[in-house]
Each structure stands twice: as C-alpha cells, then as structure tokens.
Amino acid sequence: MNKLVSVIVAVVALVAATFYAPDAQAQRHPGSLGVGIGTSTIAAGLSVKRPAGPTALQLTAGCWRAGCNGVAGSVDMLMPRAPLVGGQAAVLAWNFGFGGAIGVADDTFAAAGSFVLGLELIFRDLPFDVVGEWRPTVSVLPGTDFKAAHFGGHIRFYP
Image (tube, rainbow, N blue to C red; front, top):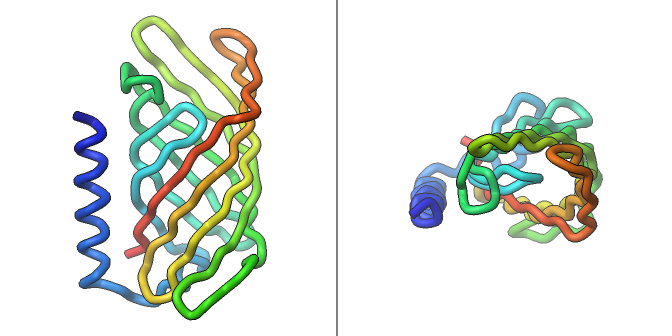
C-alpha cells in the first residue's frame, strides 16, 4: 500500500511539472526548495533539499526502511560539485557529504551516520532532479554495524 502511495505522488508531481516549468537552474540557487520522495540511511518518504550557498541540506522523513514498521528521519549536509557532463536537455552533476539518521519502531531505537556520494541528473527545462546515492553507513544503535553497500535515491520537484 505504501509503495502505491509513493508511485501516485511521483506521477502527480511529474504531471504537475509538465504544466509548470520555471527556470530549472533555480535548483542551484540558494533559497530554492526541492520537494519529492526518496530514501536515505534508514528513512523512506518525503525528501526535501535546500541549497545554501556552497552547501545543501537534505532531509528525508517517513517510514523506517524495513517494511514501514516505524518512523525515521535523516539529515544530510551535501557539498555540490561542478557538473561532470552537460547537454541541451540535462546536466549530470555530483555531490558528497555526510549525515545522520534516527528511527523508532515498536520498542527499538536506531541511530546511524553515513558518508554520501551522489550523482544528480538535473533537467534544464524541467524543475526536477533525480539523484542516486552511495551511502556507506555506520549504525551505532541498537548495535554497531558497518554497511559499505548501502544506497539511496530521490526524485524532487523545485516549484
């Protein structure tokens, strides 16, 4: 059921963007706000990104990743870098950073930190970005664990 809601939200956002497409480069300007869906260290749901000068803050809040049996949230500090390649329709950029996350499910509390290395597909004529992230993660609660193969992603609209 939660996957169905996520798909419906994504489709509505894509359709809305086809009717409203301001300067997509506003994504890179401090003060712009991207809103969409995404997954991070232990959270999946609402994804928000706000560029702030040479950095950007990214928040993901919603379900605990495993089966949505709790709530979780994460905050990342990202450092956007120069685009790798650019074309008439889109730009492929990258970023790196770090973040932390907490989650609660039943009687379990979780906390983790992660390094973030992301690839961003930024559309020139549409106010969207699509992001894939590699997120090596260190869990500190309820026990310590390291996961090198941990990934996340986001699709955001910049109104």
